[in-house]
Amino acid sequence: MGATTHETGTAGAPPPAGEPLDRELVDRARAGDTAAFATLVQRHERQLYRLALRMTGNETDAEEVLQESFLNAWEKLPEFRGDAAFNSWIYRIASNCALMRLRRRRRAPDVPLEPERTSEDLPGPQFGEDGGYLRPPRSDWSLRADDALHNRQLGSAIETAVANLSEEYRVVFLLKDVDGLSNEAIADSLGLTVPAVKSRLHRARLALREKLGEYFGER
Amino acid sequence: MAANGSAFYCRECVELLADYMDGTLSAQQKEQLEDHLSHCSPCVTFVRTYKATARLCRTHLAAAMPQELSNRLHNFLAHGLPPRKV
Image (cartoon, rainbow over all chains, first blue to last red; front, side, top):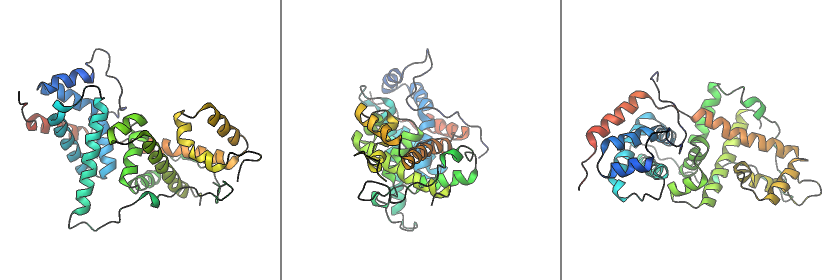
């Protein structure tokens, strides 16, 4: 899409000096100030778009997830507890919207049934009884990775590998490694414990590392 | 391939990588892991490619939001937000 784009942002970054804090905007929006809510949307839409796009895999669904998420946020704002970060709260809403959409899509009659992936399907290193690798990593492709950074095939391999992660692993990986949320914020957003977040993140990275290793000819 | 003369194996090294990247290992775990890495080249390769995985994905997946999609979102919300019940 040759569109003008917003800059990509960093999740949880404080507003520029002189701009109101999220908390202040939330208070105003809670009282019915739609302009304050529009500022919150503007502040967080880029991160939510990234998440929605990578979760759903297409721009149309991502747009609908964003609309639904912010509409839900507006409606639920009176229930929002001010002691939580708005950032984590809105990620929780968007993650749920994206996951619900994926579940609805799976149930749609014209969509061929895909087997639901489980953690057992995730590839990763295997170890022998002596605690060593059954197949030790053979090549350090990290040295070539940055040279290949703008390679379209690599981009496609990454997108496919991420899309093939099961949803509960993918969402954690995206929130942490793409959007830069802390483990605590992800746990808060997804209603998980921090150890569960760390475990899913690690399993996702191991699986993606295997796939990238295949791309770089490690196997 | 276990570390020579050490009770800390490649499997433990891999299990600790997420915490290692977060900087949340205990001092003892960090020392054990770094000691293992000092004489286990497969794990050095593993750690480098594990870190590269996160870096590559972040760069490739950092999609920018199309401006017209943002415009449509704001337009939708400008007309679609129900008024607050006071």
